[in-house]
Image (cartoon, rainbow, N blue to C red):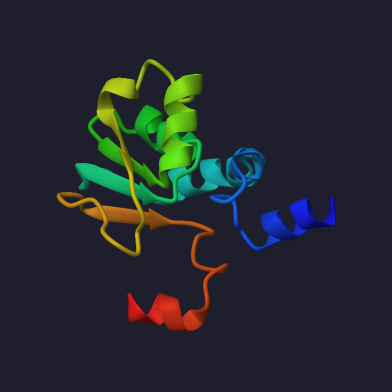
Length: 134
């Protein structure tokens, strides 16, 4: 049991897929608590495309897209998270045609052709040397 807790705390979710899914669902719950504040506080009217790096379940992007019908988005996360979203139909049908799912690591590449990147709770678990290099 201690190893499971340590793995989740160290964000080693890619090693243990079950722990990764649990972590992803937990992080989505945290994001849900403040997504309305983000949607109402930011003016998206001059933006056409947004990418959420480490976007997990896509709940923030869903809220943004529902309030901004002109927007298109890219939900960018590690392959196991993107597969979970695809397998469990986590993006609501009303906005799925405006939301592209893309798997990868933001340390290697990020989506192009977007005007805004969302980055929430994704840099805190990496050594600062790695973060500053990118």
